[in-house]
Structure formats: structure tokens, C-alpha cells
Length: 364
Length: 226
Image 1 (cartoon, rainbow over the protein chains, first blue to last red):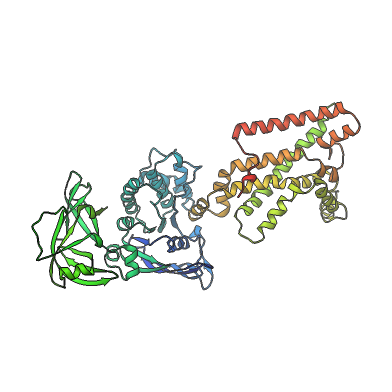
Image 2: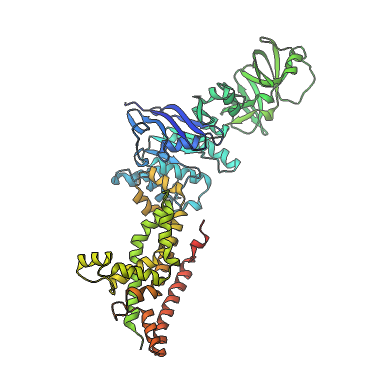
């Protein structure tokens, strides 16, 4: 099989504005999802639009294997019609004057005429739109609109999907439901995707890999969990937040309380999930309370999670100190300097960590 | 007593003007709505000129251009051997220019209101610029296009000054309803003037009433522009 690596090397400067720089690669042969993550104004959407051919960079190169899309040196730019990407802008931009079937069929322009009806029927079936063929976008729910937009984009068999803040316009409950559905649909579609988002839960659920955008440049690129768990520098850490992110399994669920297995430890959290489900848990470092080993008081406390462990490392982080401990899984705690001195913590010392159940965020 | 020949000529002129303005005005309106060129305001001003220019001024310049020694007249004579000034064709050209803003402005207002994201998605789905215009922009601008067509038709039906300057008063060729009425009033034949004015009033009112009733259009959308 030919080289299927999307390589991006871009620079765009705005008069009186910031400059945007990005450099990353994505292997399209193994369907993957790359998240462009960062605060608004970091240049995420510009990069996505450059990939779709709707915006032009000043310098750089975009190519898939040997096929050039953009070359700043020679001024070459493949028009958006010929890039074979599925572009989903913010708000999805469904054609309001066309019904569901016509919206999906609109994407079939590049499909041979004899295959078009079958292709459209196949996608309507694949994305569960049967029965809605004659509705207009205005008569659809948010989830149905998302599925129509995906069907329309998938119709011409794109080699890459580009999604700009796919869930940002939705209210929270809908967003959480559609997040899981979108992940499922992206797997079903089997097409690699590049997703722009500033929502960390979205990044964690949807992304295999993440590129963190800081002030217009892709500062760290790597597997999602790794990046969120081990930010490369302070700037990345500030954006992704200092948190522990770990895969977990639901072992019990009753009355809105979950029991989760995380590494070799167990945690209590709020929520309802089926037993056996695989989820992610994230715990903010500021939410972790450390207890000195000697002060192991038998006094009852309200915090549901009390985890004995050992200090792995201690690093200063501004006015706080970041303490990594091993308590059956690696956990990061942020405490103040006086607290550190009072507890007399040092590497290898025994500690206990306490986390309230509501501070254990269950994602996925 | 009604000058049916003049009524028929006016209707023919208005219909032909509308068709030509559709062909010229749709691309022009789209260009104005989407262009980022620095000279766009100049084109817009040129298109809007007939809105404020006295019809006699426009007619005067057109008469000069269409005369046997004018550039348009010479070109026309070279191509057809005929005369442009004081002919139906000359009148048609004048009407098109005179009614240009009444068609182009509603067109471009409607085009500008079409969400750009829809066009961009269409391009990424493999549709060319022209196909996107035909399948996305035009269907979503139907209200504005219809408004422009009706305004162009109605405005041509009612024009007087330009016709007087470049058309003259040739029955069956350039003698429109408004000229016929003016002619009758000059001759103090008020009964004939009234008889010819009535169908014009009736046609105009019927067309507008039907349009408002059918589509609920706003006929002066550019007043709310920007």
C-alpha cells in the first residue's frame, strides 16, 4: 500500500495578529483520530481550514504520502473539490432547502452516477437515518443532524474527516450523549479524523492522539492519555490541566454511586454506568488531599477514597508543589509548600491520598 | 380608445428587460456579494447610479452613445446595419441600465445572506463554484431573486424620462404606455390618457398584490442592508 501519511507543516501570519504554526503527521492507513486541542484563538480552526483547502497558509507544505495538497514554495494549492476530505464545520452547515436524502446525495457528486443511489441508501442505513429521508434539517434533533452531516461527508469515501468543534453548540446533556455516539460513528465510518476542540472530555473520549496548540503552534503531539498525563512543559500543563487520567473498569453501580477498579486500587465516584464498562477517570491534582503516614488517624472522614501509597517524586510548580505518588496507580497531588514541610514528605515516604467521590470525574 | 399597442409594447419591454437583467444581474450580484476586491465599492456605486441620477441625464448620455457617431451606435450599425437610437433594441439597453440596481441590489443582498459555510461544504464535497451557485445559492436566494425580478419589471413598466430621451415616440417601436399617456395629455385628450393609464395601474397593482400574497416578500430589502 502506498504511503498514507498526512504530513502538515504550516505557517500563517496575520497582519497585526498572531502567527500560526503547526507541524505534525498522521498515519491514515490505520484509522485514527487526532485531536487539535487548545484554547480558542490558538489557531486550531485555521489549521483545519488550511487542510480542507478553504484557507491558505503563507508558508509550508501539506501532503498525503507523495500527493501534494499545498506547497508554499511553488504556490501550488489543490482546490477543496479535489482533496477528498469530509469537512464538518461548526454548526454542521446542512443544506436547509434539501431533505435528508438530498443532503446525503449532495455528497455523491464524485461517486459514479450508476453507484450513487446504492451509496446513498447504504449511508442512510449505516447511520440509522432510515425513516427520516424526507425530513428537512430544521425538523431533526441535534443527534440526527450530526448523523446526516457525517453521512453527507462520508458519501464520497473521503480519506480524512475534518471536524470543527463538533459538539460545542449543544447543551451539556446532549453533548455528553452525542460524544459517545460520535466516537462510535467515527469507528463505524472507518475514516481517520482530525477534530478541533477545546473541551478536554471531548478530547479524551474521541482522540487516539492529541496535538496541544499553544499560542499558535502545536507544542506537544502524542497519544491522548500520555499527553494529558504527562504534559511536556508548563504551557501545555496549563492548558490540559494538571490531572491524573487513568483507564478504569466499573465493578459496581448502585444508587448513583460507582465503584471503579483503577490499576490495583479501587475508587468511588458519582454516576451511573453498566458494570464491566471501560471508562476513563480524571482527578485534578488540586482535589487530592495528602495525609502523613504517622498521622493515620482512625477519625472517620467524609471523603470516600482513601488510598495508601508512596511518594515517587516531588517537583515545584509555581506556588504549589506537585507530588507524584504510587497508590495502586500513579496519582498526582498539588499541595502548598508549608503543607509539604509539615507532612515532611520526601521521595519514598509512605503517604495516604484522599479524594472525594465527586472529584473523581468519570468520562466515556 | 385604450392604446393597446403601447400597453403591449410596455409589457414586452418590461419582460425582455427582466430576462436580460436576470442573465446579467445574477453573476454581477454574486460578485458584489462575495468579492473582496478593493474596487468593489466602485462597481457597487456604478450599479446604484440610476437610483439617484435623473433619468434625463442617463438618457442623454445613452443617446450620445447610441447615436450613429456614438461608440454603441457605431458598433450596433457595424453588426446589424441598423440604427440603435429610437429603436426597441436601444430602448431595451437603456431599460436594462436604468433598472440595473433594482435587480442587482436585492440579488446581492440575498446572496450575501447565504451562510458561507454552506458554500465551503459544497466545495469540499466536490461541487464546482458554478454547481454550488446553482444548487445552493440560487435556491436559498429565491425570495431576493423574485423581488429583484418584480422590481425590475415594475420599474421598466413605469419608466418615462429615459424612454423619452433615447426612444422618442414611434408607435409599435418605442411608444410605451407612459409616453402614450404624456402624448395624450399634451394633446389635452384627458379621456384617452385616463383610459390608457388605468390598465397600467391595474397591472402594477395586481402583480404586486399577488407577489406579496404569495411570498410575503419585502420589496425594499437593501434599506436594511449592513
